[in-house]
Image 1 (tube, helix red, strand yellow):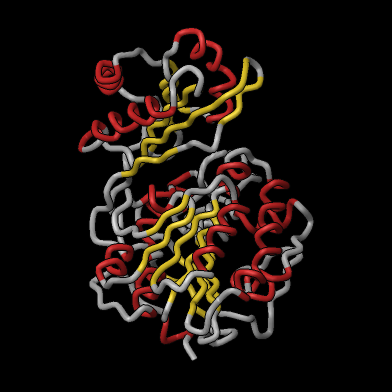
Image 2: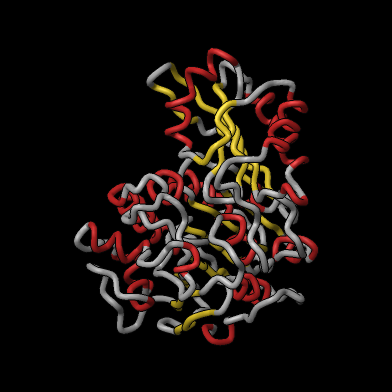
Length: 389
């Protein structure tokens, strides 16, 4: 019974890509700059896996023989967001970026949306989610108008107080927006952003829900499912792929819960793919330029890594990676165009083997299918032969 466990440390990039200047990301290095900012990271388990063998990191020692295989990957797609990164890992390459709206959404889009939901909206700007509910929360509570906003990513976000617009109604608004925002109006994700609390103390809840586009071609999830194996998704993975190819899914509130649910799937005897996203790095710390919080989250994951490794069965393979960067030490609060680290571990993986620099994230997906012995037409090149005993 073979299984691939793929864990995405959301936004944990490992240095700017050569085209970073096209994205305003020169100097970004999420892991490297955090290590400098905290005057050296203490992450012994990721260190033993070979993290500093990929790139020098202050406080983290390169290993003579890392426990697993190590390397990094460039992103072939145009973009630097969640959907682009995860899709590419699964075999979907974007030759042109998903639409972004740096000046807010057009009057045509907003008029159509308001007509469909039967309410006016407020906001319609590029904003931080926590900041905009703090600033417009009172007006929303008073008028009942949902708050619409976007970011540097291809997203249409709708924030609403759970006591003003019930969750099911908010989700209905998101479904309406998802149906609208295709073609020329295309966005990668529509996101429900519910919050609670009172004036001066509004807090986002864990009832966030993402509505993605359908992937533009067949992904590793579909290949695995069609083979009669299981696709077990933890966190927002199910949402990123709009449920296509998913057989089991659980949503999580934070990294700790994400690790717990990953272990729950690992403790079941279900062959196939376990794919987890740990979002706290990005959502709670990267976008808020909180490098201390980001570092603490890395340390928390590092402390749980031995338990994950011990839970691997004889024929399991563990891949730890990221989907983009989000350097909390730069002025920007947006994602950054960076390489992603790749660490691979398992009883059948040669310790200390190197993956080099991969040309595309989809090499990860290709390797997963190769390991699970599933024939496929996925773009990319498997690195399994380079690292398998």
